[in-house]
Amino acid sequence: MVPRPYAPGLQGAGFPTVTAAEFRAAREELGWTQSALASALGVSPRAVQYYESGQRSISRPVERLLVSVLGVTRATL
Image 1 (spheres, rainbow, N blue to C red):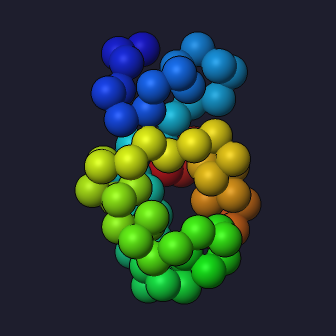
Image 2 (cartoon, rainbow, N blue to C red; image 1 turned 180 degrees about the vertical axis):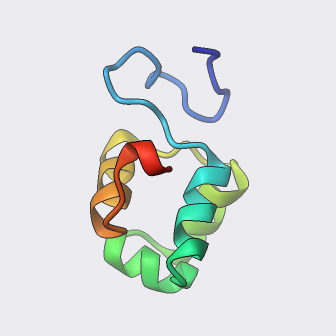
């Protein structure tokens, strides 16, 4: 796996990281707004903007919540 600069420390941790593009695509595919997803994840809308632009690392807990909240499997991202 090629390390991703915006997800330090997660590679090899037994849980593949979600890229910024995958994060955004999953939200958009289901028709969610950034604000709605932020509320469901317990983060600010600004955090969702940062995740989607790659300006902030997507933490393992947020990644797990994303998969759970959007009702998708990691394989579908």
